[in-house]
Length: 387
Image 1 (tube, rainbow, N blue to C red):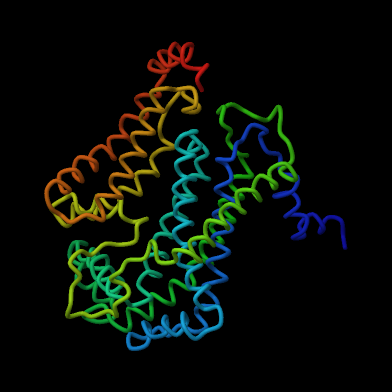
Image 2 (image 1 turned 90 degrees about the vertical axis):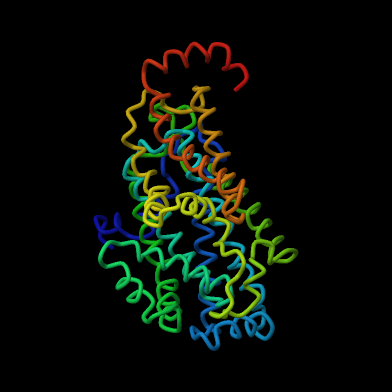
């Protein structure tokens, strides 16, 4: 083969991207969640492929086909529960990955950050459509509630909802198109992940110190591949423990009942990884306002690269750390509120925490501007020994 062509061979590209990739020596285990997300995505694609061989995207057979997979197909129960629990693990790693980037101000890598948020949004859409496929009670009514939000679009809302459903209610055409999209979207996510990695390798990884690490970098392999393998083994152990011991721990009990349009569950809620956004949606009495708040709860992450701050990382900024951990606690409270009924005091707590959630994105850049940063540096004189 011509030497000029060999540079562009898949093996050479993989070698440059993953083997001899110069990486900052100071990055910690918090940087491992990206590789864990990649493994989760591969697990989901493989298990989803096997499940699709026995699944029937038909309202009359979808629920029974899940039972068939669990009871009759060899190792079908394992494929089903690995797929179910790895979805939760995927979003757990996703939130940890995003949280680490916010803590260490990695959003300054603009293209990497924007592509990552796009992956996050498409992953949420893919997971929502996958939740509809078992055609249980919560799947059906969750799909009905969420797709009805499109009706808030001015002038075209009701038309768009009917177009999305393929009829006048969530029915067979809806299930068919959700199955098709759920099957193809992981391929789109994989393409976006490759783009995400290309942008990352153009700029290089951030590091806990927040300073330029070009003076001292080491190859990705073997130093960081071994660290990745350790966290992957731990992740596999957690997934298999959930699959073998408590497979339905994160599954809604209502989904053990076949979808019935004539019986509405007492409390409709999505999967746990959507509950924070669902709580923000419910906290606003106006339907259009709630939908806008729901969208902004994700899209607001896009504005973070615009923050003009002098603090390179929260590691040396006590006030930034305080705000960050307050934000994490607000996220957890919103997740808890999302699974509660809309009544006192849960509705009031949801409204207060929703306001604080958005206020973080106002106060975070203020805390990190230069004049406040000087006070941070004085605080570090006393604070650094305890880091």
